Length: 130
Image (tube, rainbow, N blue to C red; front, side, top):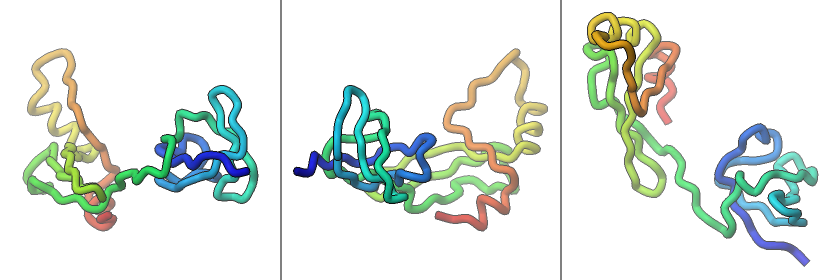
């Protein structure tokens, strides 16, 4: 008899066995772990924290767009659109642009920048549109 269906919500260190959003059948359950057949075709015990119970659709990033001109701003606002239609925003920068930002803006001993992504270079962000 097959167990319940669970949906992967995070892969952690199990990239060889899990895909975020994939559904898996529980073969056994022991406390805080499920035994499933992973993507690699082998049985593996994985913490329940990586799953949601049931056949759930997990949103994924469909597209994103620059809301600011990357040539003009050190911290560029980006709108992220997910498969469920929800939108979020983030700030994107490069290491050098971050240095520029702190040279211009830093007058206090520290600075908290929420929702910040630091990319190695702009071409990586521009060429790899999701």
